Image 1 (cartoon, helix red, strand yellow):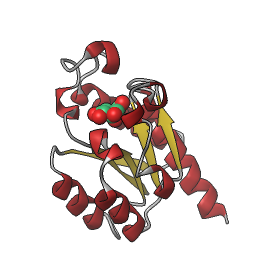
Image 2: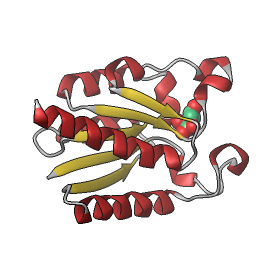
Image 3: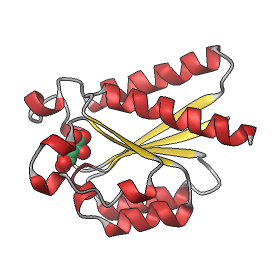
Length: 154
Ligand code: DQA
């Protein structure tokens, strides 16, 4: 079973009502339900995938959850929200647990304000998906599953 932890950082609980022109109209629940449905579809195709979503506005809670993923989850999909641009601690947690991680963003952070264009997380992630709205999460889930499958073959 590929168990994937899906982490949502600060303010993502407000999705749907928060700056819909930037982040879209899907709520966090919509996104989580979509990912659970995608995991079920993977299972129907014979690829055992389970997703466990978690959102927090608190850096420490996100770090505790990353640490607790050791030995439980095989992959992480994370939208660190604004912590992307500030948190060496979240970056260190991801590096520390050494669980393959895909970074996702609803908006394209590279075409926004200069302060959003740097990610502390990117250097410890397998890759980054940015700019596809809620679809970024689905692409992130596909990317982590493909990565785990190809690692399993080696
Ligand atoms: C975000 C981009 C960040 O810059 C911002 O602080 C967020 C959301 C995104 O998904 O586009 O909270 O991570």
